[in-house]
Amino acid sequence: MTTRQLPAAPIASDPAPEKSSRPRRRRVKRMLGYSALALAGVACGGFLWLDATSDVHSTGQAECTRVTPVATAAQTKGQAEKDHAAICGVLDSMTDAWDRNDADAYGKKFTENATYTTFVGTHYTGRKDITDAHRALFDGFLDGSKLADSFLDVRFLSPDTAVVTSRGDTYTGDEPDELSKIQTYTLVRETDGEWRIAAFHNTQRQSVMERVSFIFSLDTRPEAEK
Image (cartoon, rainbow, N blue to C red; front, side, top):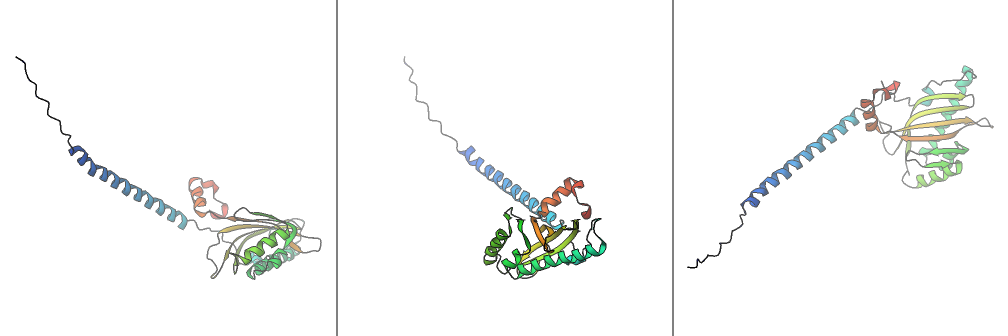
């Protein structure tokens, strides 16, 4: 007698596990989203705290003539004071030329072979190069701009060479409370007896990065900022 086998009934797939996994995936995604938002909030708060606590102590003097110059042994006190006043006069005239957006007058404050490095790293060589560039700037996005300065020090390297360090910025409208750049001027007395700028270097201060470096390496903090 032959046994007749019935065909096996098809096994239905159970959709339940797939359905039950969907809420779980949504919960994981939601938690990851919340975590990302929390991390972003912490990062943003940390950045704002670093920025808010990065003010400098050494803000300088609004007037160049109020800075006490460091003279050389080859200078008398009277000569150093006279040259200090002349150097400050050059920088005041330069600022006035900028405020009038007068590129020719601005360029005349530099030596014929002066160098000029901007905060974005552009390097100009010679008075003509400096003048032409500023003529284009004053006709373009620096039209109507003015200069703000605060002087940190004036040092004579020789009776005919001086270095001036300042904080500075350009602005339109109200003068800024905080100056975001550090500027170094090297001035020389030329054969006609006039002081002119032989080299200028402009650096953008990265306040948050500076603050971080002070936190992780205390010895990098300048003496004036301790």
